[in-house]
Image (tube, rainbow, N blue to C red; front, side):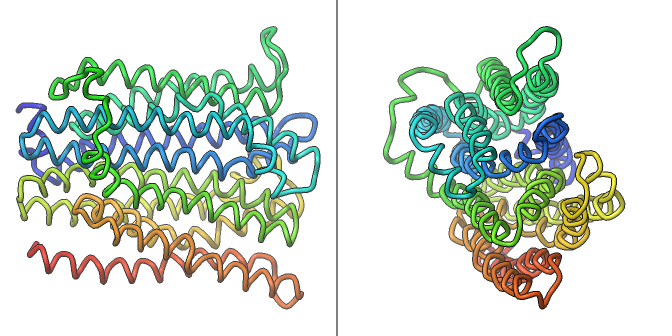
Length: 454
């Protein structure tokens, strides 16, 4: 079986697993070393909980960085898969080249922000000078050296778009292992290295990202034989960039909404107590471990359905939708069970105590109710992206991350401040938002399948 044809000839049920498992492992590793970063930082002998709070405040901008990078990569990958499905290798090569040009532009944006915008961004979220200083130090390093995560996001999607997701996983693993090894060495100053604290966590992160980028680039140049690599293909094409962002812009906005949601939630929760901000920040890292599995499978769903869409193969499109939703919901059900069973041990691992620990445990137990619905929403987003349904994908993101969750969280926060409700009530905003969004997504998918007759 030709590798260049695997997206069009392997049975969808098996293809979804063969592509999805490496992508899920890749995303889980990314979530895992985010958790490891937080674990090492929170267990610092001095100001560990303050340092964890600082990372929470920096996280929305890191998410925005990932949003622009991965969202652009989603557009590049989907357009490339569709072009290969149409046997248009010239367009596929130009799509890859434009993707790398856009990566350079994105990096330059965050480089400038790292020099000039970090202090104000952190300062808006807290008046605690210790936390603000640590947050600014951490975020500045992550932005100035962000070329690793930006270019890796593009090369990762180029490998996934041709069905070579195993190589993107190897690249992800190499960076994750590098990060986890360097974390204790640079944070605590082991083996004669300087004790850098929060700055050490940042340097470990960016070095790991650079290792992943270099590995993914090497795999792309060697394995993606369908794509020609030349500086001439990196000359920007307005037509191709428009097509990339017709697919990728909704994905960028979807990812960016996570950043906006977290930023605004930090402000809402900070109005109640710093303990709630810390508890939510830690829960978010644990939640990522589950949600990133759904993101990994979504990244398999999109090229499979997109390639089939390019071939105009309605049967394979239908099977891609069916098995994508089924496998995602099964994974999220397992994630729900794991978080419910191990909420207590997870919180202990980060050295939390008192009210912060209680709030973190309650967040895990209440928000995890939403995981299956969140997984369905994530799968629907990938399906719509593959079927040129950018607006529908964006609508799902707006519903689950802005329209429903923030007003509900604000309302519950008012009740908590008035003393008429327990602090844990605010976590109910998340299941409420995911359930309502899933209902809307189902109705839009039903309409799309009717139009496509699949």
